[in-house]
Length: 541
Image 1 (spheres, helix red, strand yellow):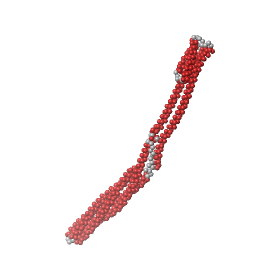
Image 2 (cartoon, helix red, strand yellow):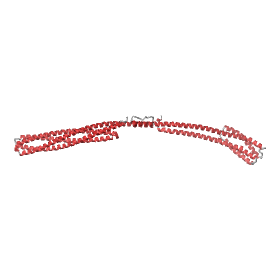
Image 3 (cartoon, one colour):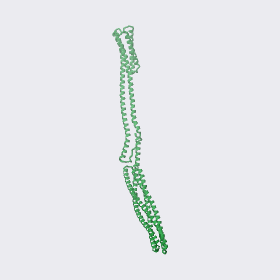
Image 4 (cartoon, one colour):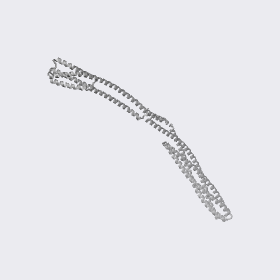
């Protein structure tokens, strides 16, 4: 019930109710005190003061006047002094009696006053008679005994009636005192009961409010402790009521739900990262194997190019030798047929060498095409590696702080793939240049072969004529010069190709090392993702 009331309202009730109750008790106490004060004032005004007034009346008549009359009879006071004393006593007694009659009178008191006033009239008549006797210089009585008897017969009943009034005042005061005491005791008992009830009700209310506050706090604390001890993110704080603690419980549950979703996403990301790391490791191993094969093929190409360079050098040497022989044949035309035959043989040999050289150049072109295919494969692998590294970087970024190491590794892998791609592009450019040079060499060889055949035909046709032989030899000499120049150019091109192939081989070795490093990095990344998956798997989601 209390959990539908806000904590502020509960605390306000806990503070306000005792304050209001104490204020009510204070007003009740003030009312009781005011009633007692009013009763005390009533006793003072209607009983104590009248008691004094009655006493003054009694003293002035029954004591003062009687005493002065005795003094006068004993000649202790003169007549004028007696008259003045009587007038003064009567005046004081009359004033106090009239003041007494103005107070609040009870029925019994009114009855006694009526009796007292009848007796008071007799007393006043007797006093007036005494005054008249004194004024007329008449004796107050025929004898002292009669004076005393007559005086007390009048004054004693009046004094007795005044004593009755005094007793009435005392009895009334006592009754009021008893009533006030009983009222005080009953109201005191009621106040004590009210205070006890207020204390009990306040204590019960405070305990209820305390339990309504401490229970949800303990529930929240217990749930959070269970989540922390058991790493169980499926637990939720029980939401009861509609107060600040229920709002706090809803907020805590929302936070736990968000954290649960985050852990689930992190688990999925770690699994994806582990899978991608294993794939990257396998791809890196394939790249390393491919690059090792490329390195072996490149070594074979370099050997073939070296052999081709040696063959071209031999062709060049033969061309120079043939040129010298042609010049000698030109000088010794007289040896015509024999020398021409020798020249034909040399030309045939040259043609055979050219054909072999052409075959070597064709083989070089085919190997260049194979190298280009391998380079394309390396380039494709580098692109795939770059994509895998990019995906790993994205997944590491999703992992946040825990994926920062993965992001660095993925960036290094992506940079390595980029460098590999650049190297393959350079190799492709070199292969294209090599293929162009090979094509030009093939064309030159075909041209040289054609010219060699033509020289043979001319030499055979001019066998019958020395002049024709001389002309043919001259032409052969010129052609040998061309062949020598072409073979020198081929030698230079072959040297450049050999150098490029060696550089390409170095690049392949670098790619192999990088691929091995990338494979090791992939394995390390896979191990780290496995550890992270193990650490996160302790949470129950």
